[in-house]
Amino acid sequence: MTNLESLSLHRLPHHYKLVLENVPSLVDLDTCKNIGIQILSQGIISGQLVKLKLSSDPYHDISYDDVDDMCLPKLVKIKHMELEYSIRGDGNIRELFHFIEACPYMQKLKIRFVWHKCPSNYMYGRSAQYRIKAVTKTSYDHLKRVELVGLFGCPREYEFGSCIIGKATALEEMFAETRAYDNVIMERKAISRVWKYFRRKLPKSVNLVVE
Image (cartoon, rainbow, N blue to C red; front, top):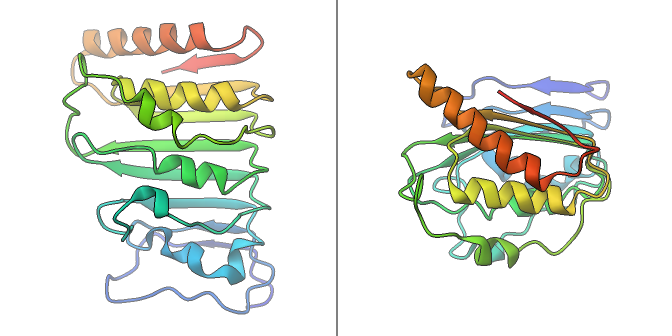
């Protein structure tokens, strides 16, 4: 499949393993949930992808005792990355920085948070900012657009977003979308909170859209 440029997988049986070989033209990869980040360990593709969409559930597809031991290959050609990231209760989100720092020339980043349980610090919890700062080592000089989808409005999401936009020196636009609410009033309040928080953090030159 030497001429294959784009590959999208919507479903793969759990007992199957995806192996990509002899795909020198592949630049766009969209994987389904049960493939996870293991696909990036196939170094044959990590250096050629320009657009990548994948799902990560640290409870299932990261077999590291310490998140800081996580070692992803450098994705030096990635310009656009979309990541669906599963979180349970008070799960940590610092793993996300390993994905971002693996893509030094990324221009567009979209992260969809999938909360399987409402975080205990949803409204009032303690800040985890000291943990997040510990893993942010570089600036994101090429990142122009950031999208955060499925926001609960908890401190860890705010701090994560703040760290990203604070290091994105070329940022032009930020898009944020709250999780779905059954109550229209709660949804409007959530949108207002998110907009006020990030508007204060962003330079006036950066366009902010919240839905």
